[in-house]
Length: 134
Image 1 (cartoon, rainbow, N blue to C red):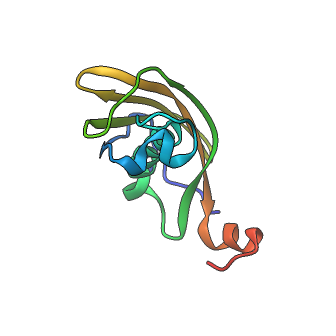
Image 2: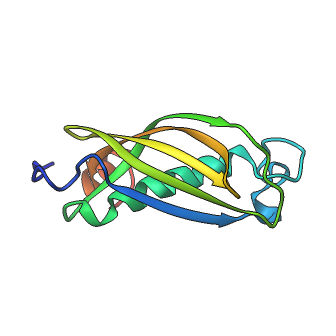
Image 3: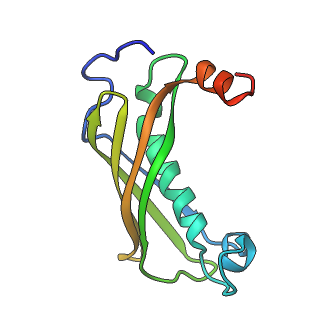
């Protein structure tokens, strides 16, 4: 992996992504419970999508990021039909390691909060090591 310019990935990068909750997003549908409310795995996927979006335009050619660690507190239920927004903010860059603070809200209320860590990798080399193709 080649070195990045200092400005490429710097603390402060942000992104927001939204999801209108459907039946397919519920705990019942994803197997994480038996209630028809937004499932925690979908909250996590939305949070990770925000981190990917935050860095997407700042990565060198051939690079991507992969998730390595998550701390997520799912605080409130969200019923079908409501829209949640995940905001990711890059707070720390330590060589290839990226740390994001995550806030997921619905109607001004915090639904979930936490941290997501990702690592910058060479896409082709990563897939080769994983046994797949690039």
